[in-house]
Length: 171
Image (cartoon, rainbow, N blue to C red; front, side):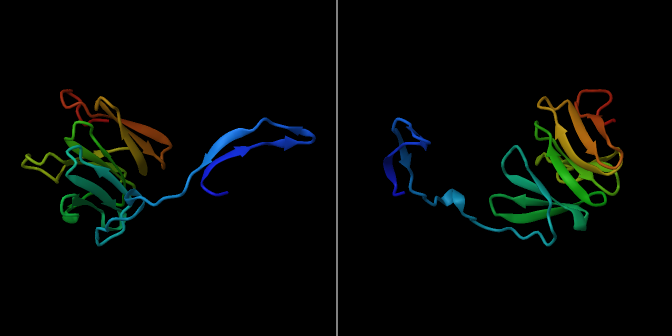
C-alpha cells in the first residue's frame, strides 16, 4: 500500500466488517538508525557499562583478562585494567563509585574504583571470591546489595555493597 490514510475491511465468509481507517507510514532513516563510529579495543569485548558521570564506558575483554576504559568525548581507549580470568559481565554501582566485574574462570568479582577524583581511579581495589563461574550481576537500585549469578555452582552470591556497612564487600 502507498503511504497515507486507507480504509480496511475484513471479510470472513459472507460477513464483512465495518471500514476501519488506518495510516500507512513511509519508512524513514534517521541519524539514530546509523552507526556513527567505531572504537578499537585491541581485543574482543563482551559487555559494557557506562559510568554515571557519562564520561566513560567500561568494556570487558574476556581474552585479554582486562576491562577497557573508553573516553566518550574522544571515543578512544584510555586504560586497560587487569582483572581476573575471562571477565564476563560488568555492573556499575548506582552511586558511580565502583564497577563490579564477574570473572568467569577465576570465580571472582573484581571491584574497580571509577571515581575520577580518587587516587585509585581505574584500578582494582579488591577481589571477592564468589560461586563457580559467575556469568551475570545486578546491583540493587539502592546500591546496598550486588547479586551475582554463578553458572557453575547453580546459585547466587549476595555481596554487601553498602559503603557504610561493617560487612562492606563481603559475601
